[in-house]
Picture 1 (cartoon, rainbow, N blue to C red):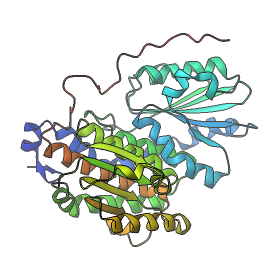
Picture 2 (picture 1 turned 60 degrees about the horizontal axis):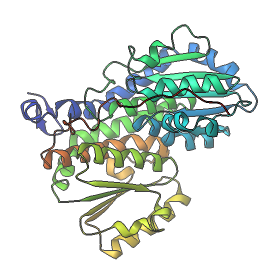
Picture 3 (picture 1 turned 180 degrees about the horizontal axis):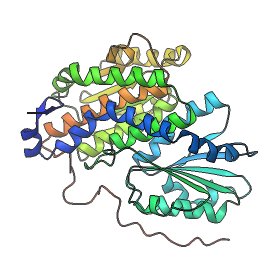
Length: 374
């Protein structure tokens, strides 16, 4: 009988948790598939991107809603650093509600749309608004659903390149897990490939899932009411995603918060009590890590939180550190798994933590209004 995150198929089925567990565990293999998917189309992608990337004053905007927006927030600081170009992360929810504050008519723009289903109302609306406002706009669509509205509307349009994630990334569970990380890997493989670092974190994550997950499960048995995730640079974007996973999978029973380590002292630290778990997604950058270590030491000395955990290379038995953007992959698997265990401990079904429908797998109830130009 198969086991996922230490649980049998039978137990997971009974607790409406099988999809979430499988989709967390499949990620190391999915990452290899995502990189291979880009490699198989690399010439086509490069030929399409080359004239776009050559444009003066090009804006490269990663967009998406919710978890899909955090793809951009996680990788944009790294892409800006290594390329010397201006990459930005702006959510579709911001573009749709305030398009003229975020889109510039005179600047050529490459809009990189990330979406699990491609059926969220804002996904298509953001593309249409960008086309309406920006004089020269191109679109790179990264989606897990070949049959979604975003992918369908991308067919046969000269200013759009649509890339579908590998099979299995269209999560069946409520929470985005492998869909999120597959889009991260895909975007990095297109704009800043590093096969060696990808293989390092893939092997390390698999090792953690095979050998370290029982300890995390035991740790998750402790009571917590508040969950704080801290990260610097792009890891702050990942911290937002980690906090969201805990909030979603526990149906809000564990309140979550994210911040940068330096920002946490400026007021948010007041939320810490004896039922607060704090996780710091530590950076491999020696300069940045000094600030993180100072705060971790301070939090431990305060002795107010239930626990303070610093995730780093040694957490995943990696001998050498990797760039923060690649470390984000094992970091988020750790946080996904922790949220999964907390969900089961609270007698909540991870595959559908909100069965009454106030929150849905694909967002509903959004009315898209026509743009009224002033």
